Image (cartoon, rainbow, N blue to C red):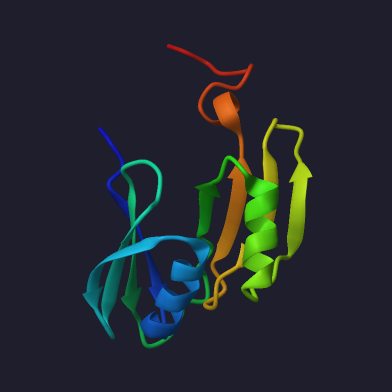
Length: 126
């Protein structure tokens, strides 16, 4: 099994589209104002946004986007006007992470993990 895509909700898909294009995702389906789909610059997964009239009170989605040059990417995004909740820092689980929210309040984590993304020292195989 392989993950094809993740879809999130937005009250303004056009605005959300601009935000995610700033992050570096490539638009591959444009059905504005109700739906868009992106291709990530690396890997095979895609990411889509669909329109809702109101965000759910319990939307607690966290999206992780990996970047091999995390610190440089954060500086680049800050220059484009994107604000971060926390700047890149090393975590105890061997990842380096920076946190932010998109325009609809969805939590985003930009990270660098290298081999530890799928193969941390504590991985359980079986």
